[in-house]
Image (cartoon, rainbow, N blue to C red; front, side):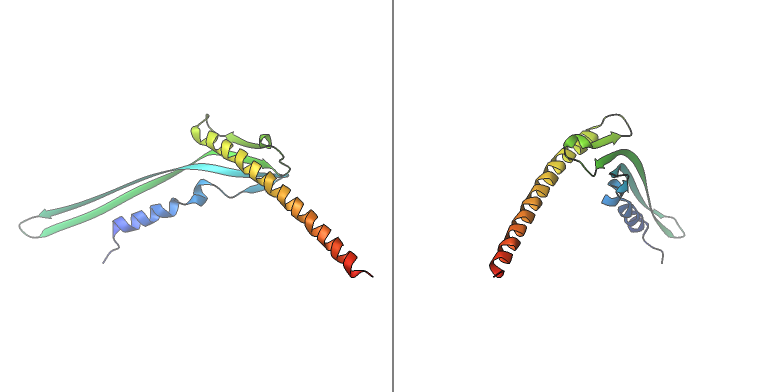
Amino acid sequence: MSEDPINSTLEGLLKVLNMDNVIGEPIESGGKTLIPITRIGLGFGTGQGQGNSSSNETHATGAAGGAGVEPIAFVVIDENAASAEQIRVIPLKSQEPLNTAISEISELALEFLNEWRERQRKNEEKREQMRKGLEDIASP
């Protein structure tokens, strides 16, 4: 018995519809990280028919699908980024709403990263003060 064409086509399309295919693997080079952004388009169709002839009954099922992946932008992050201006979105096409959204998200991400770095720095300073305090107590 052959495999169900509808399920096998749908399974193949679902493999393409994966977040890793939209947001690509980061590429690190020369103190910068480049993150490719792509657009995925999917199409899917099925058909089924049944016939009746004088000699026998016939039944047919079919499915087809297709996918396309199109690069649309790169997010470029400088490893020494101190402000949102150092995170850039380089569109590969004309300005689109997705590029605007990515730019806005990158600004929020940088703000979060700076706050996290500041908390890490303060925690490290506190640990150092505690270590010195314990050394002072332990020393005769």
